[in-house]
Image: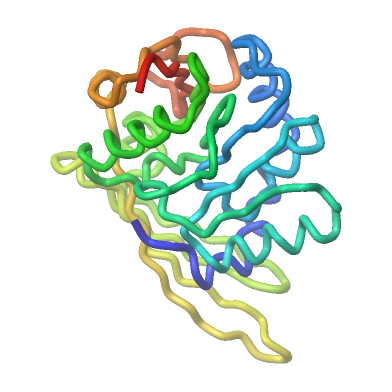
Length: 249
């Protein structure tokens, strides 16, 4: 699972089209629906802390975990400006450790797709289950096979900004169900642009595979939604939200 390095510098710039406020509102509505209205919440794969900050502003006591030092530096800079009391931990979600249990865990922006092996997915679920309060809730999103095959596929995407530009070359292996995207970044430094290259991989999981992994880890399946709705997962869902519950250590 590759950590964001060069891309961390411009991640928020190129993610400015994501309505984080609406995403956080949807997440808060799910947390409330399943009985988590306050208390400690873990954000796995928190990145630059955009969702973490919004949940903290909503009154949750937030812990953010990410394995990219560069992304966490940006998250901590946001924290210093906002003054919010957020604990950030530089840890791999396959091996994370907390000081105690939490009421809920969340993982947004397809962080779970970066877990490339089912055995590792089971391990993440086991750790989450271990650190949840009794009957605690785990909410996360995932990209779907429809998105990988119909929207990303073998496409090339590019964006040119004054401060930086990127070229995203995407490749999806339908047999292995691995999505590879090669990023070429041009980041402005003074009057010149420096070129950076990164490769990222994501795994496509079926809903049944995720349920099986969670069951093996000792968690109960609660619900699966077409993202940002309360509707069931559809054949053309691009992103889905899943809810699991702690059911014994």
